[in-house]
Image 1 (cartoon, rainbow, N blue to C red):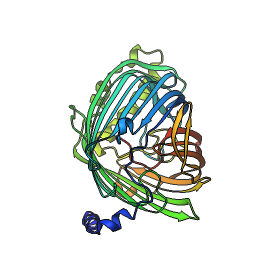
Image 2 (image 1 turned 90 degrees about the vertical axis):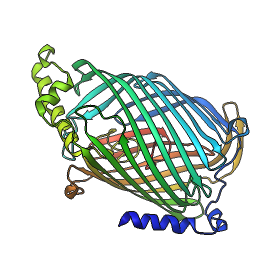
Image 3 (image 1 turned 135 degrees about the vertical axis):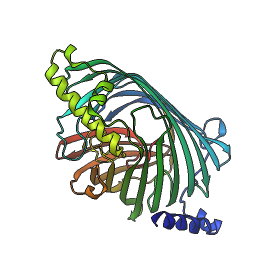
Image 4 (image 1 turned 135 degrees about the horizontal axis):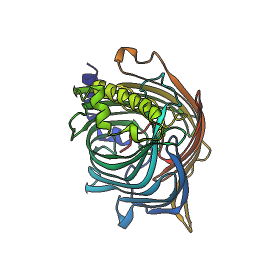
Length: 416
């Protein structure tokens, strides 16, 4: 029934006169004003780490809509490079192509050994990857100044699991194996706001279905349905009060391996060869049970990290279902259209922004248990909003401590 309601809303919007559509936007959604940014910038991702990235961003190159961005991470907790080519217009302002490539020679992230909300924050495994590669392509069909869009994404991921460590950094296992995946995503976006990059009034609804295209033997075959709704209320002349609700549900098509002994064997860790076999066995047992639950119920989009529940590490809470809501007051300290052209930066400065936010989220294996246990985050952030980039620095606190995020892009947005 909800799907029919959303379809009705979409067709109602598309049936409006074109003049009414254009009046939604306070700025043109497509422009060819050139700009660039070349400088070292700090970054930090909760649960992953930080460092200094050498960033180069070139907007609207060669008198086109196309943006090219590159980030080189020579040192720090994450090392590698990222390249994006976005807004390549195959059909002007209608059919748009994006490309994303990442190669990480060093990256470590946390995986909680137990799923759900009541897992111990200190009960996790550090997973070290090397030679981790992602290649993503997206086709976007866009109408009416980005009011309505249909997108399709293919994302190829490959990486070597170099070793597993316990929370103290002691090695649990070496040379665990290689992971590969091919994921497909289909989505629709209905954006009734005044600006796609920096909205201040209106509502935005985004729905996406994600599926792994190549499911190996023993893995769960599932579709992850994500729904993201954001409401923007204007405060004063240029500030905004934002409300967001996000829901993710895994729908299992075919369960993966659920036999614990077989899962342990598939993990490929021989604890008898480790320095602390007992600790290794305990960790292996927890990882196997977590994998069993994932293979049985599926895995929805996790909470924690860059976008949702920002006081927790990346992927802190995992389950078959997840729900999140948040509110954020974005206080624009300036609202200028001031051209600038200095040694390392050229473009249009649009706003310096302070943000104050509060968030709550929940995950569960069964849909009836969703919301019974919740975690929250609250914090403050600073943003620089330019003609093509939102650069944010923020600190969030919760019942497991504080985390600092330094990254590009607004929270709560759907990422490639």
